[in-house]
Length: 88
Image (tube, rainbow, N blue to C red; front, side, top):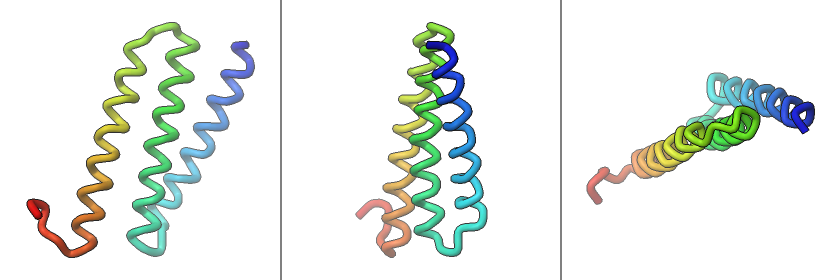
């Protein structure tokens, strides 16, 4: 089972590199925002795979914190791009 998890981990890291390229070279801000969302999801997947391989559950807490911050950041950026104030 460890071999499959290692392969999945390498695939996740490769896909993260593609998302980083989209974040850096994205032609528009919404493209970059989608790249950031997908990158956050991939990081949580990487945390889950590492937690399974090392049998340490605190790594899942890092993934949960990452996805919460990613969600809040996405909401903030979407509100900013729509032209509204953050307190509306």
